[in-house]
Length: 421
Image (cartoon, rainbow, N blue to C red; front, side, top):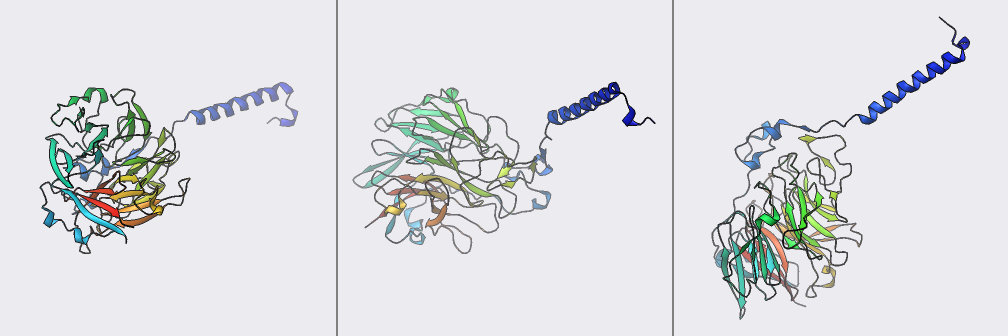
């Protein structure tokens, strides 16, 4: 064997070039190596009888947990247990409207009429007030989950799963025929988590979420996102991705940033993952679904390396399976000063949990920069010690006088919360 110390210069140059080429090839191969694709467990791909069962493990197949049935018939006022509901000292709670089975999101026209969307019953209601008395009529029926209602001036927009309807000046012309805008908004077809909460933002755009078409899966490009449109359906932008199922959002009165609730996935146990309250500081953020949940919880069934890298985590979690719904920043002057710019968040209540959680309205306050969140109970008494419940609060609407309206989807009722100094 030749002594390396006696090799001629040409041999050293050739050996060095060969070593450099080998190292370059290795480095190039590493750089071009694609990341491993996500893996999806059998719990996700196994066939199920109903969509809500998707994601259960074989060990969970015998679970008795199931979505809570909504009450889709009128509840007479005397059967609404208002006396069991509690608000803080100084506040007053009263039954403001009833006879709205399945009533969810609320939107107010300029002339004071309130429009209420539903999910399971397929109706949109209108509430009119005269002399302190309120009457309810059905604007339209037999739609597919028309949960999303928004009002601009006196014109109503209704978003169902597969249709968008505009009722021009309906508040002053109750018999107006709707204008079908479905084609302009190009709605994706899946039903699961595709019911909507919609609202006009401070920029005059119409904000519309498109939930994941599953409990847990790798969604297609049309889902697990929030979009915004011009009022005529043009100018569509996807402004957030990785959003499993938001059905409530509002804008901070000062910063104009969007804050939104998001439901965590089911069948990962009683205590995980928690629902979320998120802050959108800019357009284009990724909020984690399906790989990363809540405060940084990797998914059990849809797995990839470093699942929470690049994910915007929530400002605060809101409890496991609590079904966080509407969020509303308080901007009125009726309530005490400490409620100014606080968020009111409705938690409709859990089904995918052995001990129920939520069934209340809470307040959330933060520092000016969105840090140090504090979650406190506000409207309670919907959940009883024996796990029965007296209603399911869904959405909050602020009236011009500073009072709040709270919809109860289960009782088909709307409560008014006021404060007396």
